[in-house]
Length: 77
Image (cartoon, rainbow, N blue to C red):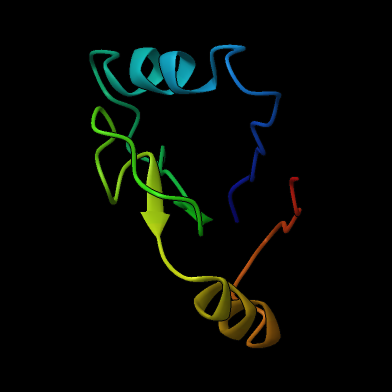
Protein backbone atom coordinates (compact mmCIF):
# COMPACT_ATOMS: atom_id res chain seq x y z
CA UNK A 1 0.00 0.00 0.00
CA UNK A 2 1.23 3.50 -0.80
CA UNK A 3 1.22 6.65 1.22
CA UNK A 4 -1.15 9.59 1.00
CA UNK A 5 0.11 13.13 1.46
CA UNK A 6 -2.25 16.06 1.86
CA UNK A 7 -0.98 19.38 0.59
CA UNK A 8 -2.88 22.25 2.17
CA UNK A 9 -2.38 25.91 2.80
CA UNK A 10 -3.87 29.36 2.49
CA UNK A 11 -4.54 30.95 -0.86
CA UNK A 12 -1.41 32.14 -2.63
CA UNK A 13 1.19 30.15 -0.70
CA UNK A 14 2.30 28.09 -3.73
CA UNK A 15 0.36 24.82 -3.57
CA UNK A 16 -0.29 24.74 -7.32
CA UNK A 17 3.27 25.83 -8.14
CA UNK A 18 4.58 22.99 -5.97
CA UNK A 19 2.29 20.47 -7.73
CA UNK A 20 3.39 21.66 -11.18
CA UNK A 21 7.05 21.29 -10.17
CA UNK A 22 6.47 17.86 -8.64
CA UNK A 23 4.63 16.52 -11.69
CA UNK A 24 7.25 17.90 -14.09
CA UNK A 25 10.06 15.80 -12.57
CA UNK A 26 11.86 13.47 -14.95
CA UNK A 27 11.75 10.59 -14.64
CA UNK A 28 8.24 10.64 -13.21
CA UNK A 29 7.90 8.26 -10.23
CA UNK A 30 5.60 5.36 -11.18
CA UNK A 31 3.57 5.54 -7.99
CA UNK A 32 2.99 9.31 -7.95
CA UNK A 33 -0.71 10.12 -8.36
CA UNK A 34 -2.74 13.26 -7.82
CA UNK A 35 -5.99 12.94 -5.93
CA UNK A 36 -8.04 15.79 -7.39
CA UNK A 37 -9.36 18.46 -5.09
CA UNK A 38 -13.04 19.28 -5.35
CA UNK A 39 -14.46 22.77 -5.05
CA UNK A 40 -17.78 24.49 -5.56
CA UNK A 41 -16.25 27.87 -6.36
CA UNK A 42 -16.17 29.19 -9.94
CA UNK A 43 -13.28 28.12 -12.15
CA UNK A 44 -10.65 30.79 -12.78
CA UNK A 45 -9.52 31.40 -16.37
CA UNK A 46 -6.00 30.07 -15.72
CA UNK A 47 -7.13 26.82 -14.06
CA UNK A 48 -7.31 23.43 -15.72
CA UNK A 49 -10.33 21.41 -14.63
CA UNK A 50 -9.39 17.85 -13.71
CA UNK A 51 -5.81 18.66 -12.66
CA UNK A 52 -5.93 21.46 -10.15
CA UNK A 53 -9.56 20.97 -9.17
CA UNK A 54 -12.72 19.11 -10.01
CA UNK A 55 -15.33 21.84 -10.22
CA UNK A 56 -18.75 20.85 -8.96
CA UNK A 57 -21.71 22.17 -7.01
CA UNK A 58 -22.10 22.24 -3.24
CA UNK A 59 -24.66 19.42 -3.65
CA UNK A 60 -22.09 17.42 -5.62
CA UNK A 61 -19.59 17.77 -2.80
CA UNK A 62 -22.19 16.72 -0.22
CA UNK A 63 -23.06 13.61 -2.27
CA UNK A 64 -19.39 12.60 -2.44
CA UNK A 65 -18.93 13.31 1.28
CA UNK A 66 -21.88 11.11 2.26
CA UNK A 67 -20.54 8.38 -0.06
CA UNK A 68 -17.18 8.53 1.79
CA UNK A 69 -15.38 9.42 -1.44
CA UNK A 70 -13.04 11.93 0.21
CA UNK A 71 -9.80 11.30 2.08
CA UNK A 72 -9.98 14.78 3.60
CA UNK A 73 -12.75 17.35 3.73
CA UNK A 74 -12.56 20.94 4.87
CA UNK A 75 -14.87 23.89 4.40
CA UNK A 76 -13.39 27.33 3.74
CA UNK A 77 -15.17 30.63 4.10
